[in-house]
Image (cartoon, rainbow, N blue to C red; front, top):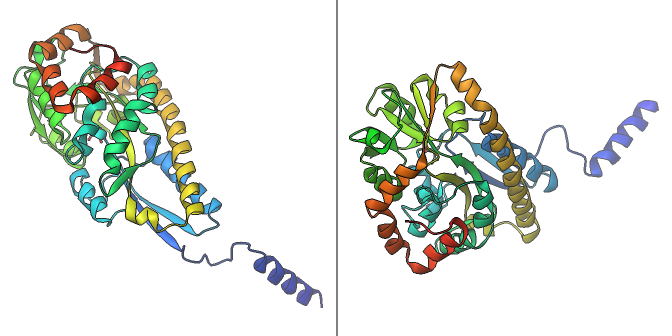
Length: 333
Ligand code: X2X
């Protein structure tokens, strides 16, 4: 008798919408790719975002995350999201620039002096301008960009102290015209290499150096194959969380809202995580035998200006977009 009561109570509970023991497949399964290791704040907050979306959608939406370029390099994944083979992708605005040139503007060398300029620009008119350009393609970007960080130069050969130290240096840069142009202007010899191949390119000494924020140098273990770290802060970089418009349009409006809210709120938390990681990571990199030096940015900025870097890119972006950048960065060049 008691037993019967127990199972009928269980049936009521189950009919009331509790998760059954064997989970049903979600109604919508979306694939999200990125190029960073699972230990990076980007992946920690993406995972949390996916869990939240699953709960709030009552299991109807599942976001599957593929970290560490598991689905291919950034270049490959960019074509996959364009065709809809991948639904979501976090990508640097500069690499997106191979498809949407205007997106590169947020990476102009030495434009942003600190986060006090970065977030107002990206959450304000500059970010909106870029997202509009993205919307003119099969892609869209969620409102809040995720943080990459201010980038620093590492090498296996020597510290970078003054611009001349770059002369002839074989440097890995991510695939993007702005990155190549900037390091040519410094006098280096840059090669476009996807992040998925960067560790091994450094290890086999195909290139002697690269540049990335400390949080990425640390989580991707680049300190294992690099010795010097020069704090150039030469540019800020982030990750737009891109979506394929057609895939996203398959979700009913209420589920789209759940995804959008979870994505934007996770990005804001991730920004704070990167800030605090950047604050503590230098010590850990020094413990791993990296040698740090600070850098006076002034001669580097002057070198870019003298090489017509700012003039050239102002012309490429056009006066309207350049003026929006300078509204936040102050006058450049
Ligand atoms: O490729 C890089 O260096 C990285 C991880 O910073 C970007 O995604 C731009």
